[in-house]
Length: 81
Image (cartoon, rainbow, N blue to C red; front, side, top):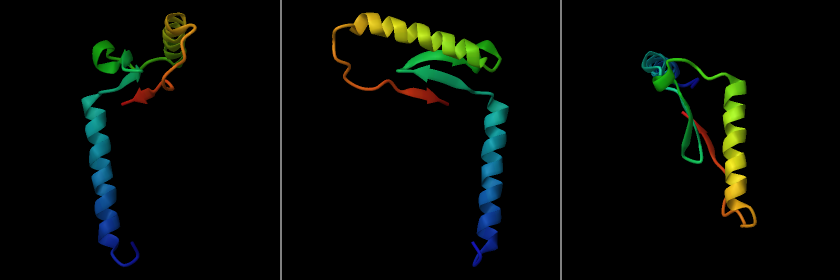
């Protein structure tokens, strides 16, 4: 970056454009093992942490009853977009 300061300036500008685009789209979704916990597009608001924790606990309890006695094939995956 010391050799080419324009590259650093261009990179910072590109990151700013991406950030502004994501803000204008207002897309924010939280999924757990492919099941949607929250969608800002559907609700028009950001989720409350307590709300996400409650939904996650409910989904995990359902999973536990379904897989009780069976070995889990893989660890659960939480994804935030």
